[in-house]
Length: 488
Image (cartoon, rainbow, N blue to C red; front, side):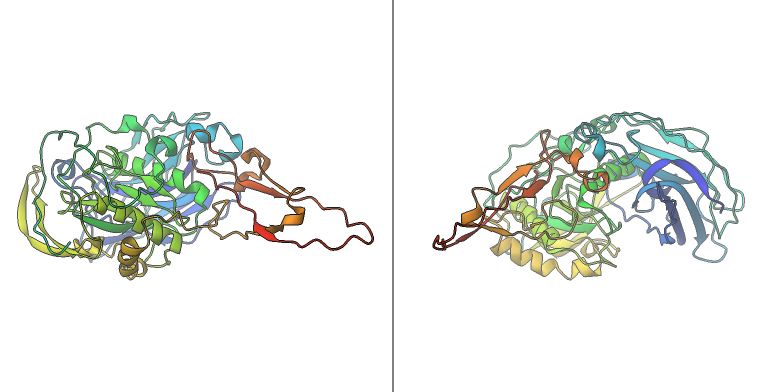
């Protein structure tokens, strides 16, 4: 399909009306804003069912979202997987701009994406011989500070099995331990807010929804709570692994917008998200220390919490920082309910009918820290992450109680930084100071809103000490590490 210019966006996916499942393929490529370079074609995976109950009954089908970074043009091609089987009608290409949070907007150097707020512009795709074209545009209200409305505009045509058509007519703008038998919790009305139980494991640092810039106006229904957390399911976002950890907050905002606006869920599906630098983000609203019912593992949301690692671990490998942070959050949540990270638990699968009613459908025994694929027909969390579940369980049992986030990636670019020691003799003339993020290049200064007063990456400075006077005996130098608390 010919190049389709759009307003800036950073995440793409394809959705369609209703609950029809697709046996087909969809590929996208995008043009990087600024450089004009086109990405390779990348396949979009069909999203595995996340919610259940009433939330599933109200949901639409879609592919998994894909983070593509700041982009301003897109091409799509879709095709039926089986000969003669038509694709669903009303296919729409959804492009999400995560916007800029209030904390990020205070520093213009951080706002390298289009500052129009989180948006989800939906372009209709011609995927059947006689397509029905519809264009939608949703305008969530976020904590972002807008400066420009998004105004994508292009029209293309394509053959049903080769490419997709993108015809926007509206714009989207935003302001920005042993084996146990489980007892399900599934209610049609909001559940009372429970009391948070203490945990046997220390709570790890968690970036709150307010800090990463969640748009709470998108969430229509109050959170629901389950009786207790009996298991943890590990997921991946089936996303790019080539991202800066300074983009992580924007990625989480984009995923929330996609889950709500494209897939029709009430809120972000995962309870927690972890990036490759080990940063932990609060997911679905309701309280990190409470048993919030998520929308991550169809059939078993009534017993569990869901942790998703940012990235695609069918193709990439999870970092030690990500694995250890996932273990820490899993151990903390299970520790609130006296559940061992290495135990097994028997849970009753709950299936949902078209009216949102659930019924039991057999028992399944899991590890208390399990992969999404253990409970649903999916490749999630990817072969490389699934192979590390044993290590996550071990670390959750033995290494989490007093551990700090295991990273020396001070500037959070995904690369371990060199930490040098200063001799004691020179320590009085050397210093470690903090500089505002605006003093660093824009490409390296986009920090997630960890706190409202987040500090910038430390700037390392040392001054030369004058040489000793002739005849002065050498002074023993004792090295001591020079350290600084990383932001957040």
